[in-house]
View (tube, rainbow, N blue to C red):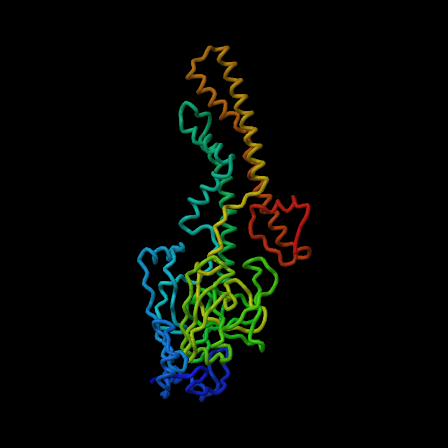
Length: 459
């Protein structure tokens, strides 16, 4: 029989120090680790028939258990995941796909096809180059009675019977107001793009199978990679914890950016890899099987298959979620979810454009002004109807013309003044480094709302 006992390794690897540039100082360690994956083959073991009958059982279709109870060292590589064409198209445009069942993949195998998994790129922008103009324009007329009213007034000038002046006179103010609002929206979205680019360009250490260290950007992280995350670093993807540098074999993480809780959470590495050295983990044969992506941040279920060890279950105590921060020690984890499949992305929903209370109040004020305008137009038409005995058709035309002539009752400049004031508020808050050090204005649509605060509750 071919078998390997739990905890036994065919080779004893000398301690080797991995430099940040990715080289191993010990030549003996480099040669041993290069041959470990190839020579980590099972040893011949004379197991008794009774032992084999009592202890042989099946862990997985690709991992069997021998007579001694140890997992077969020949952990087979699972086949690449097959996905339909529509699934790949949705992934290209950033849309979430339906679950394809449990995922099973190897760690640290460069030749493994990971194209069926989403890219690990953060994207918090509201618009793209193609969608900015149509979507932003719709939002301008969707939330503002000002813009809708003046658009109708401007369009009415194309009707000869209603024309009371040059078309330019009515379109120019509206174009200026909408253009200023669009520029403000573009400014906010560019700031989001800059922040996303900063996050996507963060550098992390990838442990390669030959024991070297490669620096990779967060956007280039793929399923199955082994990442080393240092204390204070943001976790770039959902990881299964394999190793920690802490002497007690555990580590703390901060999850305040994920669930708002400021208490540190304790996480534990898998038993099969917690006592290994980083270079041993990098060249070890490890497969991971886990549940489909979900929103549950307090639940995780999976298994890890490590050469020379029994299959081991994974739970939330072995998981490091994306956007959390390592609070103690350094950790090594296998990437299990990336991009839109991470817990933080699954719980993130596209919020509607933020509008302050003053926007709603201005809409009500403009509506009252519109009702006053309607009342004045009716009075003028009634007076004309009594004096000149107008026809019904002519009275309707005159009513519309009076509405256009009196449209200045609704001050379009009020909207411009509000947008300019908001930009000024945001600028003053940003440059006030003495009173508010480190403050960042993330949305210029609601800075005036700070003036409405009476009480601030905080933990």
